[in-house]
Length: 275
Image (cartoon, rainbow, N blue to C red):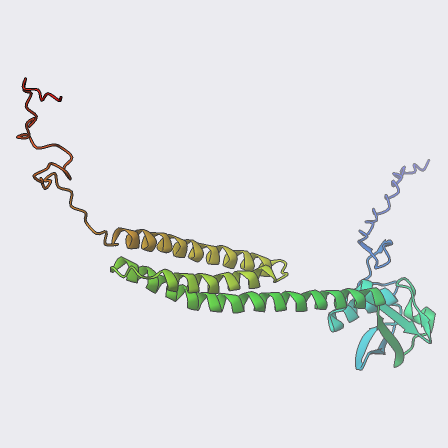
């Protein structure tokens, strides 16, 4: 009898676990969430897609941009944003006379190597820039006006300091000079009041207004001190009052009658008789 060796049944091997690739996501210019596409590394698109050169005309400038043919017009806008400093939201791309959306692919729209695309700036963006330029021009004009007033106030400030020094040294007759200098400062204050300014120019104008007012206060104080000093130095004629009075013999002209005046009337009993 032949004995047969029982063979062990081998267990089937488990299939190797497949590691799912991680997917990176990005938000496209149109706001849609899509799988991130890396030029030259996306096996579905860019590895096999040919690189095309696109001529982009923008005003009087021409830009040569190289992109995979499967790129979108939104991708083209991102590259142009770096070239022109024009934000993607302010760009309008026209191909064959029609404006293209950000999600539309270049190859699907018929863009080929050396195709020409026109870049226009959105009218709203142009209007915003014009407004900003106008505001900048107004700001610069206001700032220059404030600086001119500051230059004049600097000159007048030296005179204020010199006048204050003269007063301390004993020069008192300064009322006229103080009035003239105060009037000049008030003219500069009126100039500042007429300047319409915003931002930093407005802040600088406020500083100059306070500065001029401070100098005017110093001059007003000097004027008061000079006036008070002038009043004290006025010569007042002295009046001498005496209690010595001239005495006349009759006593007339004297407030008090002479002490040695006596009654000169004598009474007698001799009467004159008439027939």
